Length: 90
Image 1 (tube, rainbow, N blue to C red):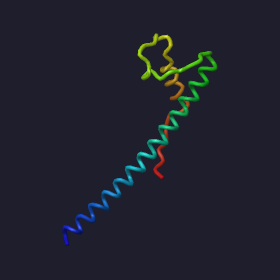
Image 2: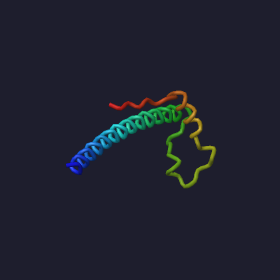
Image 3: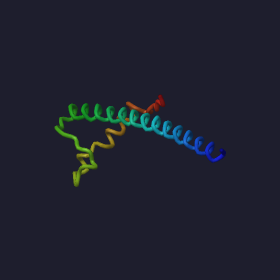
Image 4: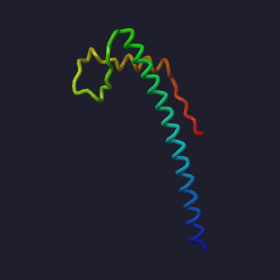
């Protein structure tokens, strides 16, 4: 009986942990989407303002001249536009 009760309790705890993990994953995904949307808006505005035709993630580049890097400008504007990101655990 004690082994059966322990197994049942273990299964219930595992279900609870999985449920909490799912909530955390969903909140993280939403927060990341909010950040990506803000970055996209910032880069789009910068492209219009500065007249460049394309923006490529630095992780996709093999080489680019440092003068073409807008990362610091984007980060500065992102910190102004989105100083905090709320996590919602619904």
